[in-house]
Length: 218
Length: 386
Image (cartoon, rainbow over all chains, first blue to last red; front, side, top):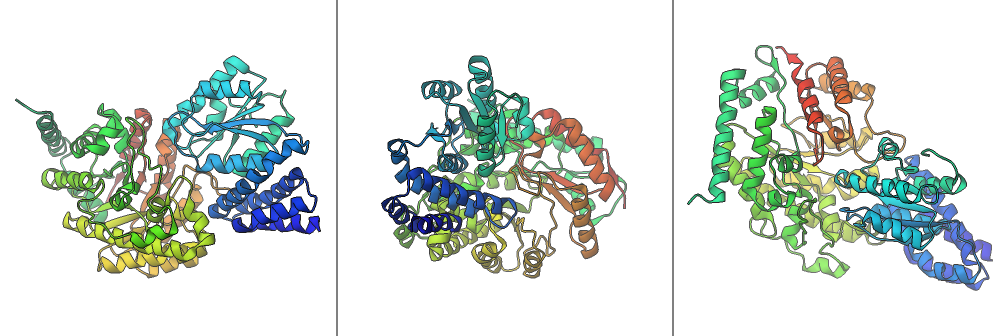
């Protein structure tokens, strides 16, 4: 029974059915599913959404809806994760850099990080580079994920990358993204990773966790 | 005592005089004439006319203004753009308010914040609940919101500069993008509505089209008959969604403009959709406009930049069908590309397709002046002949 509900949750996410997700999550929990299991199931659904987006079958509204559905579910499931003894896959401090007030892309990425088992500290928008570093140290974060939507705010990303390089090189990885960024820019500022969109951001975070001692941009 | 406003007026006058003298005495041809000859393909060997569309942010900094100053002082906007025309010896006027997507919605009641030196932002829409749409009324587009700043800029241009730089076009957010602003751009709530309340989306797009029509009527008073409907969000729709949620409202605007031109900046690549757009006369000067686009956002499987093959193919189509042959590099190409790459790309494209107008739109603050110079020099190095 729980398997059927989990499948329904996955399909719900793929179809972007926000209204169905909350009752389905509660039903799955009642049937004995663990919060972590539900999140992993949604993760599979989100991977399908990401793949379909990459192949051109899905479009941005589908990706946004997937993020919205996942965010609603994670709001219910996240408090249960610790109670049920689930282990986080890593801790990510995320936000938009100084001067950047855009949160759409950042929110989608955060929803996907959360949905894929990462603990995420959302610092919001217009975040100073020092705040990124302080929050990362306070929460013992593995990754700082910083975004810049406008080219005018790219210097903020450079600041974050350089501050981490100077003060916490090796212990904290820097993952950058956002509409204004390119892989070349990420390389130029010595970021550890770059992602052009939300599905790729999850992959990049996974790779960074797997290669924490490695060097170079992914 | 001379006021600062008077000084700006003088600056506009003097800059105009310098430009007139330069073109008359050095180039031997006035900007409007060069544009006209190039468009008609007539005349002696000459330079390709240039303009820097959507370079207002860059122009503000070049002239020592904060971005908020040119957003809220029309004279500073015109003054700074005119100085760009002088600096790069441009032949065309391409100034648009940096917040043109938010201008129309501001008349409906959307608040805009103007950080001192950052692009304006709208944290919230005006349709927060579905029921809010019932109270929406098409506002007076002449007087509401930030529209008066907009019209003041057009008044200055028309009175003082239209003889030097005739302009026939402007940018307006398309109906879907207008609706996105009304519903709140930060969360892209309209995307969720597409799934959960499609009728609301249609109603909002229809309302948005009515607002754009009201703006269009005033543009026409200033002699602006070509509206480029910008679609930064609508381009993200699937072809089916585009045809349902954007295209009918573009047609509504087209019909209301009674034969005046509107151009959809659609990046839909589906041949059937492009044929529909062309068939409905969504055109520039009565002809469909082939455009080559690049975006500053990642397009999976499509890359960041059209290939030379794509550009060649589009250009060939343009020649076969007799369309105007403009190539637009959207996004922030000049910002992201080195001067060397810019020279190389312009040379390759011009070499492949012949003398053609290549327009890099959106030139944000922070774009190196060397990059703009590289573009201008590369374009100037090609001559066209009859």
